[in-house]
Image (cartoon, rainbow, N blue to C red):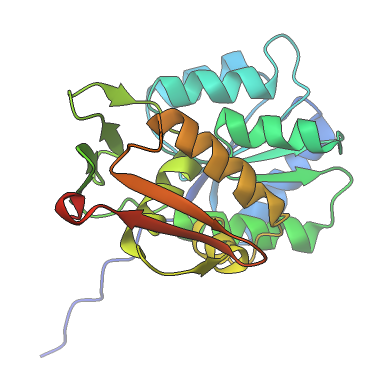
Length: 241
């Protein structure tokens, strides 16, 4: 008796938001050749229409869009609960511009002109990270994390707004508490091994995370800076998950 063929897994889906028609079509062709399901939009208004009916695995988002720019669009989508990974494309190379992209909720940032092989490698890494984690809860110092819904709440139940990368960073630190974590290990785990990110980016995200958590010297947790190495998260004994 022959067995039925296994059901094929759904293809990762990508939405390209790029106003340059040549770049948009070129990206679409190359990504489709790699086996991805690809939709395109020339503006944030077109992207909004596509996002009303579905959620994509990855958004490739140009920063310099007519009207609402990529930073504002990404922030708005994250505030509305978007869970897709976001790769920003821009001609801007200043560190402040790159940090703005991460703060808006992007996971990666690629400057133009870019090499196609590098873009495809970054897309592959982000798509691999884009799968939804199984439902799970963690707690520390009165905070509660719902990993399935990707939500963090304070001891009184008030939600804490974190970017996707900040949330992933917090979970990684908690799962490896009491261990000295080199910056490169954090980058590999949170940003992906195939993504090129300045190690100083970790410092910016840890600083932002501590601020959003309202850390003080009396908090039930500490994220220690280990000079020349990275970070170590410690919890008071009664707050450990």
